[in-house]
Image (cartoon, rainbow, N blue to C red):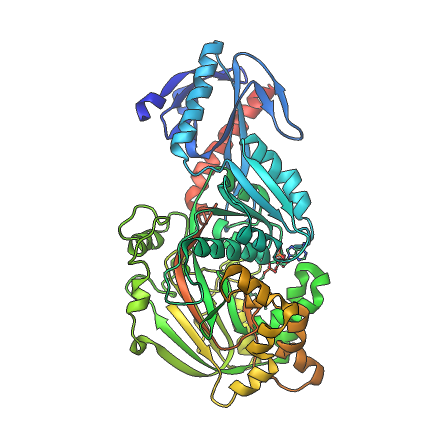
Length: 585
Ligand SMILES: CCCCCCCCCCCCC/C=C/[C@@H](O)[C@H](COP(=O)(O)O)NC(=O)CCCCC
Ligand SMILES: Nc1ncnc2c1ncn2[C@@H]1O[C@H](COP(=O)(O)OP(=O)(O)O)[C@@H](O)[C@H]1O
Ligand SMILES: [Ca+2]
């Protein structure tokens, strides 16, 4: 196959002669008629070619085609380091080539398109796109239509776009409607919107497999459809932690070239019923209180978290609790090993083999999946009890623009584990120091009142004597289940499971399930906090969480190592600048 795809000839770019070579994996062009030491090669991996068009084509500001016989235009991913030191921005690169004959031009376009098919098998052809028009700064529609849709069109992707009219519409669509013919689902919005897609796709996959999501020991089936995220929300943590930048064009290009990043997901259960899934932050105490407070101030947009963070910090709360956890194998990795999970991460690759031992592809299934969870005995659980500022579980680093290295900088996207962070009660300045370290590269775990554990599962319960109080305060399971307004009974019968209890109407939850809000009003110190599950308040306090390794796949590749890619970026940039200057003179 490789030899069939090889093609080599002279091509002209801006009246300069180049030697162009397609080797199968790479497309390179080197300027001829130059002294040897000045010869520079632009090299584009075939997997990063966005499209090949006959003629001289422009797509910005509008698509225009000069339909000349001997020309073709190649669009590809171009990296730029301009956007900060954590991830690389991707942009659409474009080069217009001229050939000596039409026959040669047709040979080039045919070979390049064939190479694309061979070397990027996961490129989507048809996508289902959900836009939340109210996420973040309410720019979802504009972002999609002006920045993303022209790129999808160029890449020959057809998309069915749904602008949502209510919360949970995207999730319900994915649970119920015909999804035949779609290669992936794209959400334009924030972490809450991503969570809807996550619940819809996981629920649909388990329904079709006849699996019960309520049972935490059940091996869930990985979702066959990929998820793409076009960031247009407030925190955009899942996008930031899997791509490295919040940039709609970069994300659109990852979707177009069919990148694939598996992601661990935690299932949250209460009394043998699934409550929700989580990928980024499952947080009790500070982060739960911030979310609860922030819901009152949605009108502030993304700033609501800064305001609420300050209010909650000043309220100086800590909460009693019993935390039990099932440690992960410490030989594989540690949350304090100071490594980072970057694109091509070896810890995650080895985990794929561990999680899916008889398969080269984690989307195929087999019975031993997760056997490690079922094999663990009660004696393997570790238990701690005390007062905490916050208890957080994250399946990934949970980096975001506010915290560029994240809640747990060495966590892995796809290793089948989560990091449990216990911040014991401490004086206000100590806690501020902990929070402040989220915003810098200082080790937030190097504090005497902070512990971090790499885990496979976690249980949280209230200290003896507190259960009744919390049950009354938060409304209790029966309240939620019996209330027809919450939509819970309808959801349960629709999905055939007890999931999505957190569908309960938020206003009702704010009044009844939210101790922080209750107590700001009556100024009584609350006994319990509330769980923040990827930006949703949970209506339960006592929960069991279990990590499902690589349950979903994103159109992403993990964060590219900016330093390692720098030479490549500079070399291609420099060469393009010289070509551009030459074309002007
Ligand atoms: C003194 C400076 C203190 C700064 C502390 C910064 C800590 C930031 C850690 C944030 C981790 C974020 C994990 C992601 C959570 C999202 O799922 C959730 C919902 O996002 P969205 O749907 O986009 O609104 N966001 C939050 O819960 C916000 C937490 C903010 C806490 C300050
Ligand atoms: N049309 C809509 N009207 C109201 N809420 C919606 C709509 N579409 C989605 N949502 C909900 O809005 C919540 C927040 O959306 P998200 O896109 O994450 O923005 P943000 O990051 O600003 O919170 C999500 O939980 C989602 O379920
Ligand atoms: Ca993980």
